[in-house]
Image (cartoon, rainbow, N blue to C red; front, side, top):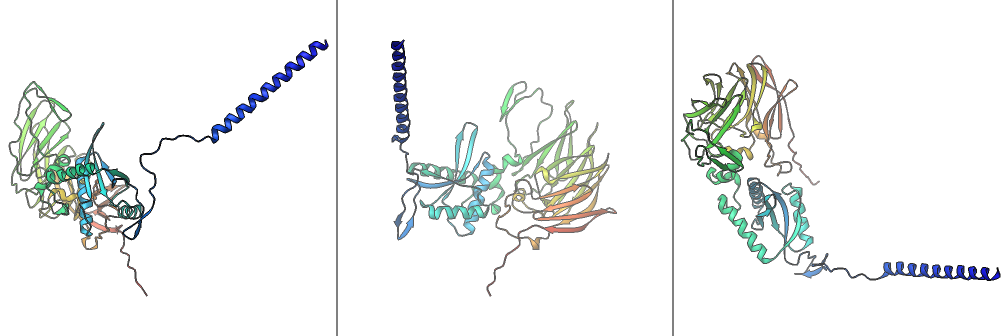
Length: 448
């Protein structure tokens, strides 16, 4: 028995010694791994360059090459160019150099991306304050520093110059002062200028993302094509209405134009003669209203739809043009099966269509529809003398429309830039009740 006891004691002591040794080795390895120097891959560029004295001033470099900042990204060329040109125009007005603002195009898996860059000093102490100041004026929303090689810079400068040549817009010139023909290529996508393509009967052809197969040729499209024409179309019930107007260009002196009314259920087509171009087509009760200019006056023509479509009525607003071309500018409020009130922003006569992107409307006109016959109710106008240039603190190019009629809970409002005007519709006329102006107030600093 004594031999057995000695054996198990020796076995236990050996096990404890081995366990202690293993624990010691594991502990040493653990803390050694924590304290051991790791070989990390060195970054290509230093995260922070050392400050240095340059031209008798302290600078903090951040780029090993050409320093630049990406300030905007767009997926629409028109939107990118308008922002690019507006940013340059604002900088030129302030006396700043605009040659360091570049518009580039970059291919991505989802399509072309358009990016705006600003070349800046390779010094965080001057670059950050400059970009922050542009942010404070709402000229840019954010910025992201990047580094270019001299080859990159030459390539992107050539790209930006190509945009200038394509759009015919010289740097430093305000977009508002450009002729309509200079903006036609850029505004075509927004306002639908005419494009022609051949579509043989019975053969599928591709136009953009559309695949079109013409089953039969019943009617030739309008051959009339003014110098600055825009094609307008709208489905209203069982009908397709289309025609040509001035669109985003200068108003055309058009004393006559054709409106085509196609009943798409059977292909029956009617051609109506109007006293003006076709710049807007909207549904109104059981019919439609066509709005357009003759070069001087603004016309509202009601169209009766049925077995034999025809012009029902025409209202003319003398010395006026549309103040807003986009769809949200028009609103029709029905108050019966064949009656209601429409509102539309209007502006001065002869104004180019694209100017609605930069100038507010003069007023909102209201017309009553009674069985497709118009009665003028009046206008709610803006107080132009109280307009404030806020330096784009809130909005400069408002993509969602800065003028529109608003009908809400029995009230009639007119949004005109920073102004909201409320009207009261009684006894067949519109009168102003009250108005409020949300424009930023001028701040005057005086010194005692």
